[in-house]
Length: 311
Picture 1 (cartoon, rainbow, N blue to C red):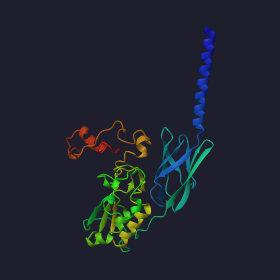
Picture 2: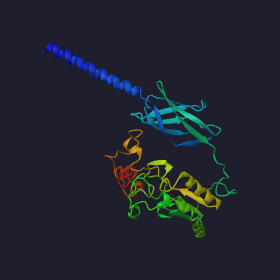
Picture 3: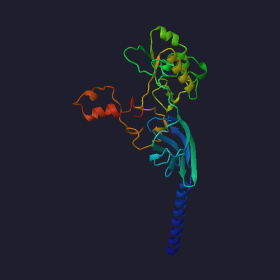
Picture 4: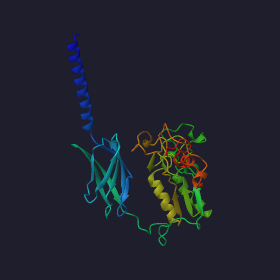
């Protein structure tokens, strides 16, 4: 092959590569924008303005707006891969309403309904006379690890991912659920308990997360524990007795199978990464020691608990 032929062939290949790359870019740019999920799943009227985390596809370069034009998206941060968008909304509406969250990207549009619910009245608490009230030294609090207390609904004992011998495992799911707690309120009240504190009931789609501290979705009740309706029923049953409910929530970390771990909304969403992170120390003394080094304090404040739970 002559030098001229080789040159012409090289130019043709380069042109083909460039055309292919341009086609890939065009294909990506024309991808259909999609909204899969919004957290939190709802908000309330006449509450402080919300910040929403939108999960979807091709959210990069999208314009976000709400069907109620009194509500504006003031600020947006979108992940580089277009899977996540953080939206700061200007305000909450004065009245309950369902609006549409709209994402526009070129000629493509995605929509999802979003509810602003009515706030419950202040008297809708432990009793009509006292309304909502927190716990104090006057209360007798009883801590319940939901999976280990009582099985009120055997139909939810086995879930996808469980093994046939799940209940025989020391760290397996043993069947306790929210209905089991509700069925024992007479017993708890006879003990003199005024406040029931339950461990997290987040969705924990992971083996050995019976304790509830390995969240894979902070806005869903794990199927082993029951449904959101079961949690609401337990709260209502306690309040009807003049008792209180304390929910254990741990926003400091999530479970290793949370979607954020493999696909984070921002590069600095966690302290470190799954492959490279610090391990939390069990000794909290460095936090109260004014002479402790940042190295020791950092292991406590930024380390991954048990080298497993993303901080």
